[in-house]
Length: 164
Image 1 (tube, rainbow, N blue to C red):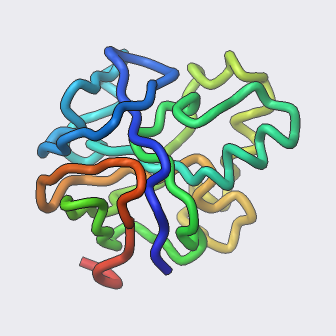
Image 2 (image 1 turned 60 degrees about the vertical axis):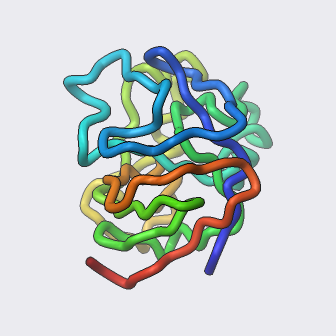
Image 3 (image 1 turned 45 degrees about the vertical axis):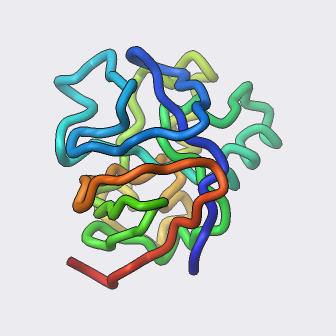
């Protein structure tokens, strides 16, 4: 099921990440983006972080002071079937092709939004790779870059292959 990129986000390191009009995605991530803790985040297997706007919207409804970009995502999307996404899936995002490498393990930097946030995003089932978890995809998906390109809000993001 295709979705739409509703926000593209970068920062000089850490979170939140702020919106930009467009960004070029290179092998190690979005131009103009950096990670505060590169030993944990970033690199070719964690070049891009995707989080669904539906998750952020639900967190806001639960009282968390979050917004698009607050969770450190590079791509905020709407309309993707999170349950259907798995490591190895490839997505076309703007003119780039990305491959999901893993779910994101929420880090302590998210505690600024509330001590319970990490538990609302991630559980033992997600950690075990079980897409049956009600939290599957809530913490986001890290992706590697298969084909470099440009992304902008309004671009389509859609699966291009079941598994690589």
